[in-house]
Image (cartoon, rainbow, N blue to C red; front, side, top):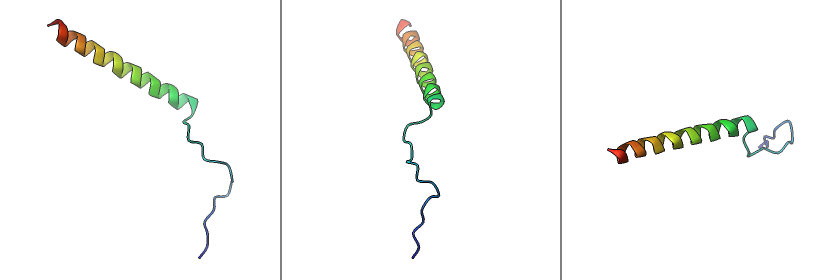
Length: 45
């Protein structure tokens, strides 16, 4: 039985690229702002 090995021995990076991290943070902050706006609207009625 042959063992399958990758061509390169570089370790697999677990962290996303900085650009992806920025996009995730932007989405999180956007959803947070929307949630706060909805809650404020419901509370003010």
